Image 1: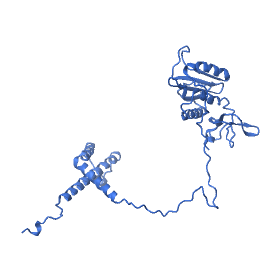
Image 2: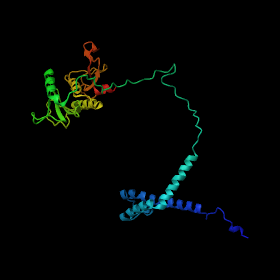
Image 3: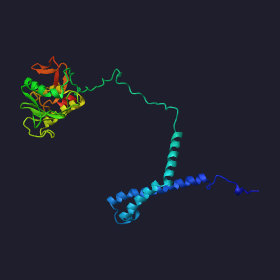
Image 4: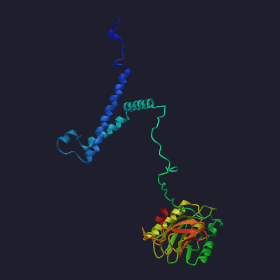
Length: 319
């Protein structure tokens, strides 16, 4: 007859419990190694002072500290540590799954009153004025401009605009044009803008980049102007071009024509009406297309009655 002590029980010698204890010890040992390695960077940057602190902190040669890091990496890659980490992760996911409530929690918070339906005694909600878009080009119904018709188009353009000249920048004017190419757009005694023009075969020419300079600045087109006003003008023109990358060259040149009176135009914002902005003291270099462009007269701001680009200071456009 078997004795009572021979009866198998769920004691500390069960295989499941021994395996669990082994995993816990493995994780505890790797955690101790990790804490030791975490102190190494601080000791390298600021070594402990001589005394009791030096005795408590890790002390050793640089080679020994690097060896500790290597030992930690090897331990983490070992099969026992990886198995323990996987078991710990599975246990964590099981605990999280057991804590999920299927019944939604009842909210007792009072709902905020909608701004669309304010109380009778409350003041009206302030709604800031939305900034006007700066990327809207007019619809261009003209025939697309191809590379083979560029030279003739520029001749007609220059004849129609006496103060404005556009020509292709090239070392050999008799050489056949090919894309991409560089155009020099200049307004007499005002500014010069270099335009990088490209376009796939059989498609309209488009402007990919623009850089503005003072009319007498002698700088390469891939640099930037020394004057803030032309740096800001470059930012505004590039912003409009990049907002609608497929806009044809004709539309971009029409936009640049609006800068002919850059230093004498007033800002179209009614609360401003200045030539130079208050903040940066620059002319209105931003542009917004309007089907009924407004102009300043002696009586104030009035509708011009015709489509055009309205000038704004960049700060006035953002208000």
